[in-house]
Amino acid sequence: QVQLAESGGGLVQAGGSLRLSCAASGSLSSIITMNWHRRAPGKSRELVASVSRDGKIAYGDSVKGRFVISGDTAKGTIYLQMNSLKPEDTAVYYCGADAMLRPYNYWGQGTQVTVSS
Image 1 (cartoon, helix red, strand yellow):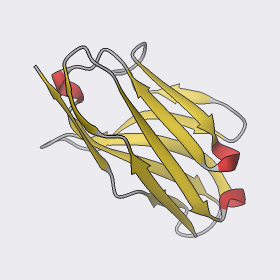
Image 2 (tube, rainbow, N blue to C red; image 1 turned 30 degrees about the horizontal axis):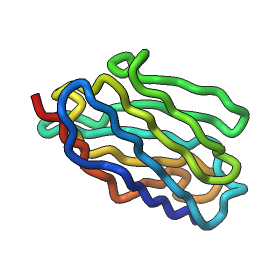
Image 3 (cartoon, one colour; image 1 turned 90 degrees about the vertical axis):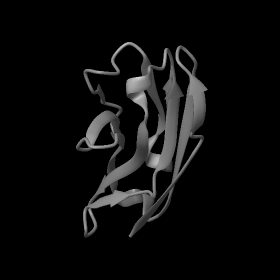
Image 4 (spheres, one colour; image 1 turned 135 degrees about the vertical axis):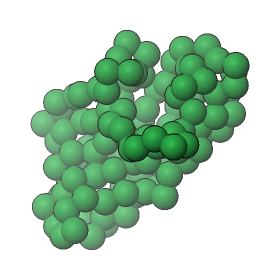
């Protein structure tokens, strides 16, 4: 089993920055990929960024060039540096992990990010 805990959300003005953190615990050796997703009101969940155990990084199209994912999946700690925030970035941000143990996909409880115009 893997447990995930996010921190760092909050309220920020458009153009500002925030940094989210995610710490995993439990069976860290089973983690393959860690990621950030978000869900805005009335919208489906979307991928923000992901980093694999071997260092491969991917970003959602809407955040490329503005957000940076970092950390160490093997150690179970990742971060999301969010720059040039826009009101449309307002969402609940979830830390996720894909692992080799059932149920294979794990999620944190989420942290609210609100960007005011």
